[in-house]
Image 1: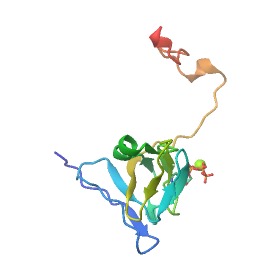
Image 2: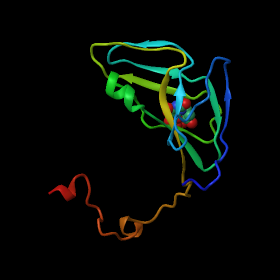
Image 3: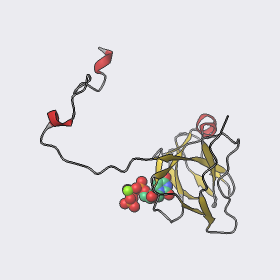
Image 4: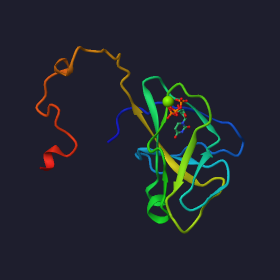
Amino acid sequence: MISEPAVPLRATRLVEHAQLPTRAHPTDAGLDLYAAEAVTIAPAARALVGTGIALGLAPGTVGLVHPRSGLAARHGVTVLNAPGTVDAGYRGEVKVCLLNTDTRDSFTVAVGDRIAQLVIQRVELPDLQEVADADALGATDRSDRGHGSTGR
Ligand SMILES: O=c1ccn([C@H]2C[C@H](O)[C@@H](COP(=O)(O)OP(=O)(O)OP(=O)(O)O)O2)c(=O)[nH]1
Ligand SMILES: [Mg+2]
């Protein structure tokens, strides 16, 4: 059951034909982002596609531009910089950097196509503090073991 009231998210259409992001189902994490321009992406090429919208994200939140799994599975189309970071203070047009990973077929985006999904999350905005050495970072069980260390 969802008990918390929905937090408002300000959005505006920069062009009349833009579509505001929509949630396909009430509890979906992602709001679908719509293309405001048509573009054909050649095999193995990328394109920065405008959504025609701008956001007023609350400080302490971020908009993450995730790929849509259907586009990935059916067409090999993903978001190159996934997840894209829309900073809370950004008031420009939200754009999606699509990558067509298919090596044979080009991919055509039409105005109004759903090209990615926006996930809003809370973020920490900590003050970075430099400490003297790695010992002063705080002791942990893992320590400096990484990069597959538990696989051996
Ligand atoms: O998928 C994305 C990623 C970013 N942006 C916008 C919002 C974000 O706040 C701004 C900057 O993004 P980012 O910090 O990822 O790019 P940068 O290369 O570091 O540019 P900048 O120097 O402007 O921070 O571009 C988008 O519209 N879509
Ligand atoms: Mg940046």
